[in-house]
Image: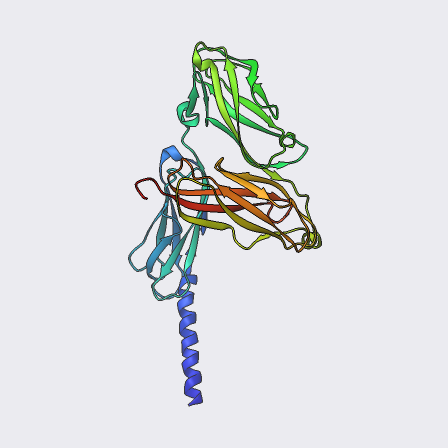
Length: 366
């Protein structure tokens, strides 16, 4: 009985080994191919991986699966006897896929447990964009990518942040930017160059000094530029977006464990259905679960209909304070969702948020 069991295991191992060897019997001319730089405008590219069956048994490909819908496989469908050859074809479609690519094909053989993997890679050069496509936002002769200049997140340090934004003079006339610029004091503007010849590209260089502001969170400013063009288009107004965050130097794990930590038992309050008169108030408890004092730097409601009242802006370790959030529904209708951003010296999560909800009934609902 034991001998029979051992024989069965031996035959099973031998069978698995022979099936795995089927895939190893295929000798490929290569298993990876680099298309190099290809142009999106030229359409799909094709490469064929050739193979020879150097084993003692006939093999047949049952399936070839690509790792992406951008790659279409084809292969020799009929059985390949020993000593004969076949191909596996990879067609890559670069449409709307600019940049580097790296894809693979998984080849499955009948009577084999081991798949074969083939790889293709390359770099797609995108279809050149027209000026209108590249710079869709237009004011007069000047085209930019957007009607706003977005700085993204800015850490509030002593060092101003400088960012360049591309533009082009899309007209057949020269455009000169004026030295006169309407802007807030924490933003400076430069042109490179200040005089743009017809069809010439340039840059607007903005410098954002967040340290000049006693503020954190999202901020929207406006800059107005003036050009030599005639009429209203000589006045060009753009928004400047930035989200200001407190800067924390790198900290060790020990320093993080000693740092303050802002915790809240609840972050959302729903007033339910309310009338459009009379102010509503709810309270959030802000708890310092850290080991050093927590400082509430800034409270920023996202609506003028919300005001806040904080017991104390410094919370000792292990203690809490009350944050009253007051919502004025007057003049509002339907579903309302407002929030208050809380900025603190918690290095793990310096910006947190509490949210209030309400359904303000109209006269018809009452």
